[in-house]
Image (cartoon, rainbow, N blue to C red; front, side, top):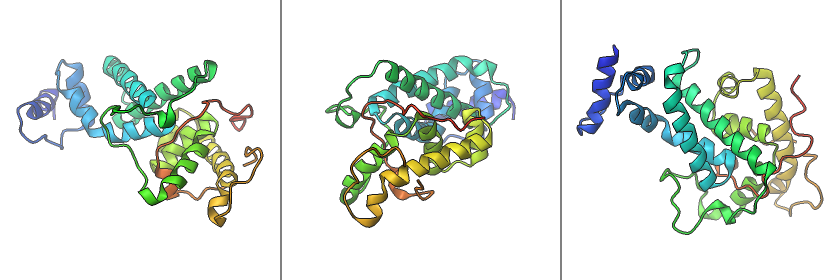
Length: 246
């Protein structure tokens, strides 16, 4: 399918006709570069929910996540002509979103602020995306898990969000983060080890142990509790963050 076909299919959405889902992401990106004003919007529509979930769970704050997602999409919109095709378009989009989130976390660590509770203001709908939410009966547990995940060093948190929460293969996450697969595995292992200690009381039904929880080991991969959005308290990573890279 050539660029003209991709542009025509993207315009179907504006005309109210069903979008041709057989048009590839790459065709839409090429159509956008060629000047189609609707193609990038269609590309974003396809991947919006997952990109939003990654941003929200990585930043742990709806307002910050919405801003990071907007920054990332503006970057992608402007950089589309430089896309080399060395990865899938969705991988490229995720990489830009994750980098935007990590940039915001690092700025937040350099200039810490006190976030609003849950990172949500009354009447704030963020991007309008669906925020992953826990059932009411699991709300307290979800809050504990969100706090624990937010306490991880940023690189470990990003890897766990992509692998354990979003379910991406390690190889894909390595491409998104731009690191070797072994580094992704190491970050996930260290992050799970920390979470296992911080969340160990959930297994026994006891109270959270007092004291420093940084010695933390393994949250089960695919733990449904980790499917929740995460709230950050201070945004500070621990001083021993990510010493695993060789």
